[in-house]
Image (tube, rainbow, N blue to C red; front, side, top):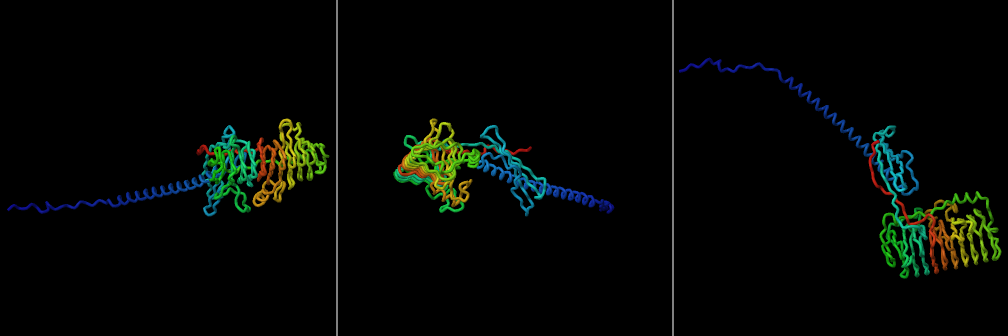
Amino acid sequence: MMKLANSNYFRIRAKPQDGFILPVLLVTGVMLVLMIIAITSESVTNQTAAEHDYYATEAQLAADAGLDEAMHEMNTQTGWTGTGGDVTLLNDAARNLKTTYNVVVNDGGDSIDKTLVVTAKTYFPASATSPKVTRKYAMDIQAVTTGTGAASVVTGVGGLVMNGNSKVSGGDVIVDGTITMSNNSQIGLSTNPVNVRVADQACPKPADSTYPQVCSGGGQPITMGTTSFIYGNVQAKNQTTGTNMLNPGLVACSGTSCDPVPMPSFDRTGFKNTVNGSGQTMTGAAASNCPNGGTISWPANVKITGNVSIQNKCTIKINGNVWVTGSVAIQNNANFVVQDSVGTTYPDVVVDGQSGFIIGNKGSITPNSQGTSMEVLTFWSSGACSPDCSSVTGTSLYSSQQATTINLSNTGSAPGAILYAYWSEVQLSNNGSLGAVSGQTVSLGNNAVITFGTAVPGSDNQITTWVKRGYMRQYN
């Protein structure tokens, strides 16, 4: 039997143990520290980025609000040039945050192109003098004009009322309120259609302090009898019935074509200053002191205090502007004659009395040899500020529009003349001729066959609207 070798030969000898736990712990600790630093740093970065985005969003909202307001001002305020400084949009005490915007209008080199530049800022805290974020944008805008031209019939919220075989031809019709037609009344001719625009600004009903407003619908702003007709292009807010509207008749409103159109403006203060500056004055009695078949001359820029009544074939020579603090009546073949020295500029005859201006019983207004007639304006209203009101609204406007302050009747004649009841009603009847008419309400009746040959100054159915063309952020 073989003898086994020394048993120590197979004994495994233990190796000395090296210390490796400490290095592992050190490396792991360093890695944990680095990971914590990285995570913390990223969290701080994310927090900073989130705060910046938050402030940037608030600035963006302020910029958008500024541009929205700028577009509103451009379309409602002639010659608007900007906010003139920073406007505070938000000042939130709970968040201690404030945002502002500033808009400047830059000309684009012509009358129809402009640029709106808005600078918006976010402040945190709200009392800070330096913004956290600033955003600047430029928006190009352009003026777009719609409509067809000057108008010979312009009414405010009282609207146009036609009956008794009355007719309108030869000029466009603009109505902020409504149109009511009956008894063979007619607008336009089959051979000469016109443009008719109706805004339906006749609510609420009954009128209250919020009057006038555009109606929300549910009614027809144009109501017509079976024997009434409109020949022309008719655009009317809330109108769905086009019966007896021809050539082409009722068409859909486009853009702002059915929006209310501001009534023609008149610089009453400037007019009064001019008349007062001339020093020319007369009493109503002196201005009316005209013998049967005689002649009297009213000087240019004369102020007449009291009422004027002209009758018995008397001729009044009109040499320029006239301001009458009372009322005026031209009757029984009396005649206003515009003098050749006036030239081609229409003289203004301003009448303040509640009875207004009456032409009746073959009374007339005669143009000069150049075809220049005159513009008659009445300013009475039921407002406490009458006759110097710059604005009349609510129930005062509603009651004023039903009061007649210009009345052309009984074959009264005013060829080429412009009649304008600023806050009240013009009433025309019993034939006659006229240049143009405007009033809060215009009423035609009793065979009033009016062939208009003159446009109301400063009024047409052309509407200019500023529209957006481009929008770009600026970084300077």
